[in-house]
Length: 210
Image (cartoon, rainbow, N blue to C red; front, side, top):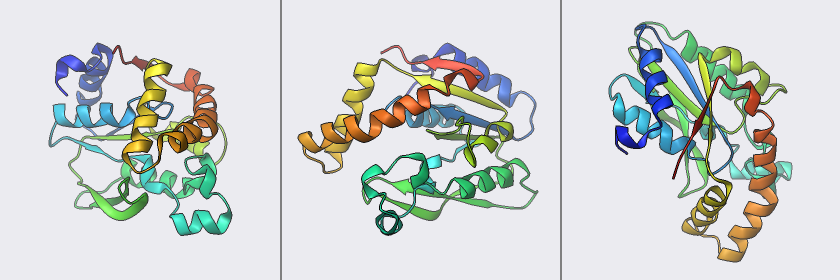
């Protein structure tokens, strides 16, 4: 994605966050399919070597644990993540020491599982971009996240486009069209309404115009 494709507000705030020279943490929050990961990747590509993306999705509980808890059919809901682990990682990134490498997990869609230690955050990284659904949720443990972030941007896009993206994503990773539509209706959209209720807590609204 080129700089011309990134919303002007995002470009301006990116430069402002990097201006001071010290470590900054930026959160991108929005409903499933809103383009959080796309924007995060774009920001990293615009400032290579100074920016690292650390997605919240790396803290998905493993499928075997979701099955044990009886939550596999709600994967993506707040209680299907290790929220406490995510908050602790953000604390480490906030206070990362010179010479220390912090390793973060990454979610791999091709296997629908998190992989530990897949992302290395180097001590000289000036901006850590973390993106996920529940960065502004006002209940423990998620409620501790906002104060750890220097800014939080709420990312939104037209709802029709957003749901089309979700259906396509689910089909791409193995669901039939009928199963994809059902998952969007019964899992993604309830989560989207929960996330939308946190919109007012964001510092800035970044809207994709596609």
